Length: 83
Image (cartoon, rainbow, N blue to C red; front, side, top):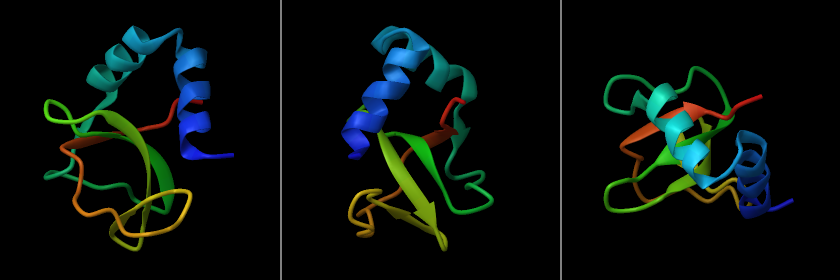
């Protein structure tokens, strides 16, 4: 399943795009302050100049979850995906 499909499932589970923004604003962690403690997928916030996307984090690198390729730069903030 692609990251776009997984993100859409998260958005639907939360109740829509507005709910995703609310979730992100309530649960965001500034990347400059801390990073995920272990290998995981997170919601990565590139606003105000970009979007909220699903990214992988592994070995202190941000990665595209489908290809494993290193992402060119870190997001402004991130949040663990909701259960």
